[in-house]
Amino acid sequence: MSGARGGARAGGAVATRLASLTNPRAGLRQQVSASLAIAAALAAVLWVLYKAFGEGLGSSGNAPQFIVVCLNGLSLAGLYFITASGFTLIFGLMRVVNMAHGSFYLLGAYVGLGFVEDGVPWLVAVVLAGLVVGAVGLVIQQVFLRWNQGQELRQALITIGLSIILGDQMVAHFDPTPQTIPPPSGLTGSVSLGLYGIDYPSFRLFVIGGAALIGLLLWLLIQRTRFGIVVRAGVDNGAMASALGVNVQLVFAAAFFLGSALAGLAGVFGGTVLSVAPGQDDKFLLSSLIVVIIGGMGSLAGAALGALALGLVEQLASVYLPEGYTNYSILLTFILLIVVLAVRPTGIFGRPE
Image (cartoon, rainbow, N blue to C red):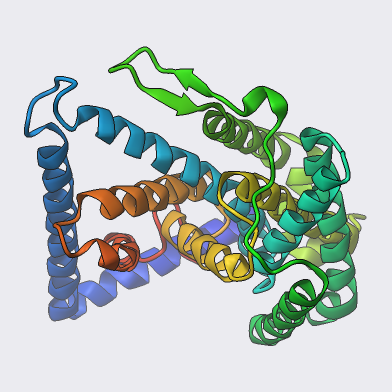
């Protein structure tokens, strides 16, 4: 079956190439769009480097600020990756359009906050919040999504409705005032970076390391275990996998549980770094969509690269845009999306279907 799918992809690529040859104007427009996108990206990079190092590399210049901003971008990227990794597992591999993923993130944040306030250690609260949100996601998948597998539009509408319901219930049952989850006692201070005398929050460095560890474990799970092989086989050809004795529905349920649990886990991380408040669900759903679109459907490496690009662009834009324009930094997020899609319409690591 992999040969047939490979042949289909190759055939699609040949057809696309032939279409561009028979319609040179379309090919020219695509090349011009890609060239303009690359030029805009290079101009933005040069502007940031000028603002950061235009006054030299000494401590009296802007180099220390640049380092801190980049580290903030990395920690934010780690948070985006943890959230988007669950989304790409569900959306990219299973083709389930889960528009309630942001609500799972916010639910995990509130559940983790409740555990910590009850005296549960932070690391235990992370695990428990992930399990609770994973169980909620599993119930939703079994009750609302299992019977319409492959019907993306219907699934999107169902999960949008569920997201609204979950959001309203969280406002009704939790304190809507913005709150912050206290970090673990060993990560409350700062660490000296040994460079320019910079001290950086320990927990933000922990988020970066935690995201890298989660990414490695997910890659090993999907690429090096029987579970990952079965998930990919069920996505490629569920009927054939079932004929070979694989319980595809059980595997998909486990994958949905894992993806939802990752969103809940990310909620505790995010509630500790940022805040726990209504509206965070929409923000992280949007960021997950952008990360998956930039990186390519179903690619963990793409999700990591997309999260890195999004986190750095958001932080750098908020500091290095010309004075008076920093309020428009959110627009650069969508410019980033346009640049990537102009060069790679399927995402950086996306594969043509």
